[in-house]
Length: 141
Image (spheres, rainbow, N blue to C red):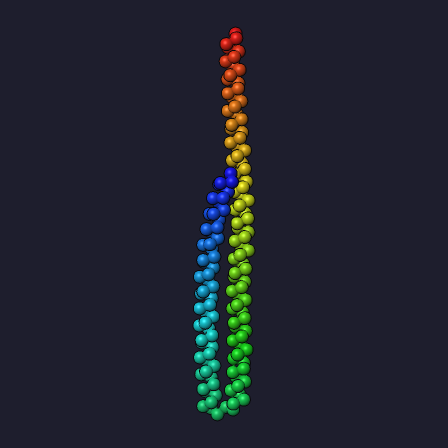
């Protein structure tokens, strides 16, 4: 039973690694989206500053826009980092729960198999004992 359980643990570990690889891909996609958004926002603010400059806006107005842009970028980065952390912790919880459930089910299955084998063995022993007694009765009769 221990050998089968150990083999099952290895299988669970492999499944867990595959799930983690999928999650890493999702996180990489999230990071790529984050980078694209940051690049887009920087280009947009650069364009707005240029437009403001051409329209004769003061340095204070331009700095206010840059300050607002910095706040927006910080919010965006915090949100995306929080999303990434949430994805990671969600995966870890799911994997832990899945592993526990599968392990519990496997232990139950192996225990039931062991009980069934024990029962079959006892039935064979009893049948053998009954046959031996029947032969004894026939022999002495």
